[in-house]
Length: 380
Figure 1 (spheres, rainbow, N blue to C red):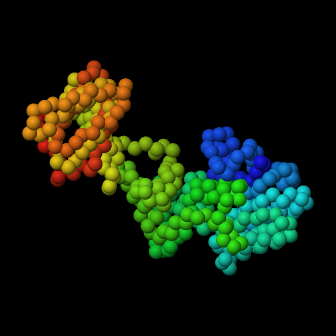
Figure 2: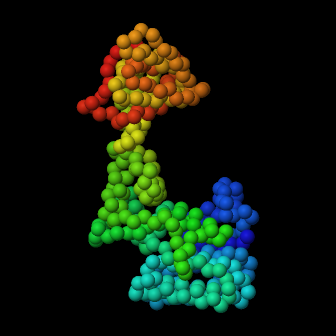
């Protein structure tokens, strides 16, 4: 299958082509692509003569090219209507009835230069379908967000992500504005399904089924919370699809010299203990380093429970149920990674039996609270 993508270097185009290439190379799978594919990439700086070849050979067209912020408003019609007419004319000249998917905008319903140009492109597609019998798919997309979107161009989310990640000022005129957003991965998945005629459609228009309706002020609050999370070690609510997608988007705008951030290591002669992640409802993740032949722990908890995973070195985890004398031994090693549960009501310790540092990954069901530590010293 030969797939033509116009606007190949744009935000949506880059993400779509990246996934198509993943599928082509076998790095990703899709139930909608069952044959070899060839991708024809066309953008504003592509040799114009190639459009003739591509429109003759293509079996499917993703028409993503368009103008969003021209210097002259007249360029809206030229870019969003004029190029569409050229593309369809070439397909018609070659008697190529390949399906054509075009990205429009919810602004096509508005009376502004951009909206009018998008509406004109939609009308042209509908006329083309009636005239030629070719299948056309018109997507009136709301705001699209995700990685590789250009800030200070046509996406408020991209601008806010970029500015907050890079310590730049932002301007929010009305935080109460309700925004409709679609995530780029959902858009790409929907577009790829269209290759097998499995897309979502309602009347003349197609749609991405997952639309996030969020107040602008809520987006800003989340982005600042993401920024602060490096200090308080929090992570977003990953069971919230929008928050998960927004966090992934935010991280893609970090300056390249700020990918890492320091953690507070609590160090003494026994080794160190460092918190990595704190969550509001899934506990705390930490890493513990024990010096050779050092014993840590010797305490028990009422409700607090933990999971220990030794990833380097070798050691012994010991348990004794409070009020009893029997000691239970669990030998652990980075050569055989396993989880050891630390039940409540058992005093426990961890001993480094080796001559090198022992590294243990630890999860606790609650974040440490110095006002209620639920930790009571008692030797095993």
